[in-house]
Amino acid sequence: MSKALIIESTRDHVTTVTMDNPARLNGWTAPMLEALLATLKRLRTAPETRAIILTGSGKYYSAGVNLGGTLRIAHPKVLHSFIVEHNQAIFDAFLDLDKPIIAAVNGPTIGAPTTSATLCDAIIASEEATFSTPFARLGVTPEGCSSVYFAQLMGAENAERMLGPEGWRPTAQEALNAGLIDRVVPRENLLMAAHAMAVERIASGRRFRADATREALKAINARESVQLAGAFLSPPFIKGQMKFLWSKKKHGPATMFAGLWITSPLWRLLL
Image 1 (cartoon, rainbow, N blue to C red):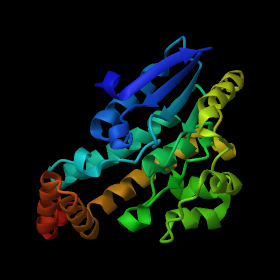
Image 2 (cartoon, one colour; image 1 turned 60 degrees about the horizontal axis):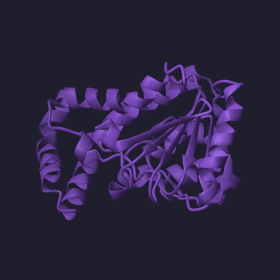
Image 3 (cartoon, one colour; image 1 turned 90 degrees about the vertical axis):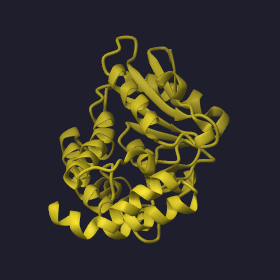
Image 4 (cartoon, rainbow, N blue to C red; image 1 turned 120 degrees about the vertical axis):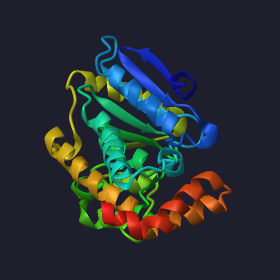
């Protein structure tokens, strides 16, 4: 499965990892996440790899996490624990890397792919990229350390614009001006520029942006993961997901959320 969804190539000790499911906008389905996290874990100890580039194929970097495809009916405590552990593991995979990682954002990015990119050493984007974190609209809490880290990267006002009700979706140039990303280049130059940046970063080793530390970011991630699990299991969010999935004719996942919503007055007593 990882071969179908992830493409790897290594040159000058820089491994480029490409999310390769353009038909689904490189969305973080369960198989995509499994393949991506396994790849990052393996590259942590791969001797030929000294720096990593993460990018996407097609028009999108990634359209985000497919919630309907990742959650399964389970006892409320089990489901809560699953969400906590699953969310924390996604971002810890980026935080635990000791090798520089560059996010080469080729197009629009939504949700967790956006926040995880900020956990890389640098973000270089094509002129066609946009950056979205629609947590408030979805009725969930911020993740990927964004509740704290966004303000450190681009100030409290811009952080609130992205994370709050406004749901600001900056273009690449706007994100650069705000401090969210590090560089903008034409799409055709993106991977070449990212490769040069990655080679330069090999000598300096892993460095988090805004002088953040791994320990502080992991603590934020752990706290946010618990908050996110609570939000995911709130009746308004469950009902919203049910309606959204049904409108997309994804009747199986919609039925799962319908069951959660109908029984929520009972099972929430068990949390």
